[in-house]
Amino acid sequence: MSDPFFTPVSGFDLPRYAGIPTFMRLPHVPLDHPRLSEVQVGLIGVPWDSGTTNRPGPRHAPRQMRDASTMIRAAHGTTGFRPFEAANCADLGDVGPNPADILDSLDRVTRFYETVRAAGIRPLTAGGDHLTSLPILRALAADAPLGMIHFDAHTDFFDGYFGGTPYTHGTPFRRALEEGLIDPARVIQIGIRGTAYDSEDKDYARSHGVRIVGIEEFFDRGVADVMAEARAVAGAGPTYVSYDIDFVDPAFAPGTGTPEVGGPSSHQALMAARGLTGVNIVGADLVEVSPPFDAGGATAYLGVSIMFEMLCAMLSPKA
Ligand code: MN
Ligand code: MN
Image 1 (cartoon, protein in one colour):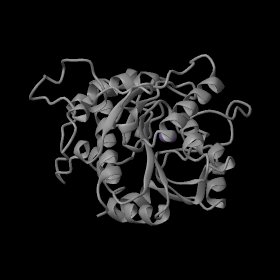
Image 2 (tube, rainbow, N blue to C red; image 1 turned 135 degrees about the vertical axis):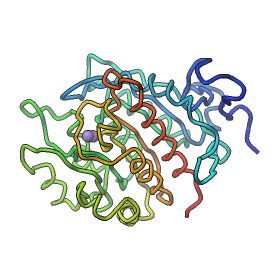
Image 3 (cartoon, rainbow, N blue to C red; image 1 turned 45 degrees about the horizontal axis):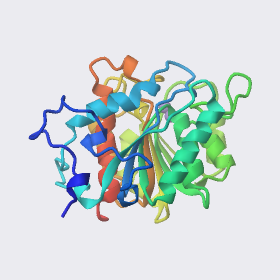
Image 4 (cartoon, rainbow, N blue to C red; image 1 turned 180 degrees about the horizontal axis):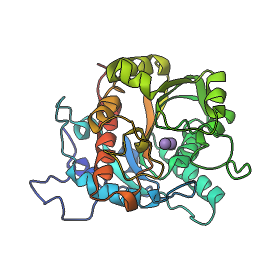
């Protein structure tokens, strides 16, 4: 029996284009709301892109994705699973970033997620560029390193940019590993491809035990087999999921800053997220949607559809 307060607005009651958009038409429960302690999964926007090294725009993604997410309905179309009846879900709002100060923004994100974690809420985030994941991990992995399943065209294991600047969207997992936020033996990266400057990022990750599944292996083996390995690598321990929309081929997801051709289709992208079912997910993010490059809105819609799959994976009973 689900609480009417935590039940999303139905398209049968109010047209999708009407009303003030929240993620998946859930109630807005800001951190000072009296019912915050009842929330089990919190959808959060992190509208910043100060770590972007190429085409910007993810600062606009949470608002665009809230609008696109009015298409999300109550039940999973294939499995029939009803995530909003399985747990109290709510839109916790946005982290207010400081677009003029990257270090201050990192701290603001961490403080927000410390509050979320202390309230016992599992966060499901719409970024933001991929640097968004680092301050979230600082809050969620404060006590012990997490496993991580990471979908991306890029490793984001670079050391520094532009003369050694440590904080960009190409460096979050290098910093996370250095800071002891992720356990490299329980980290798998899926979909890596594209031209390269050298192999330093991959060499560093592999030398610490990170498993990298390049795009050729992904296609050769297929989604189901790769996701079975991902579940095995993550194991039973607490695991973070980070999903960069540029994992998907830019034919399907053109609205992103650093596209790489030769990637998975929308369907394969959804099936990969569905393959997370059974993983002990303590938090997840969907990053790098860039609305200014998203003519027609397909990328934002795919992004929220992947978020819905991840939400179902977080709440479904083990397969
Ligand atoms: Mn990335
Ligand atoms: Mn990427």
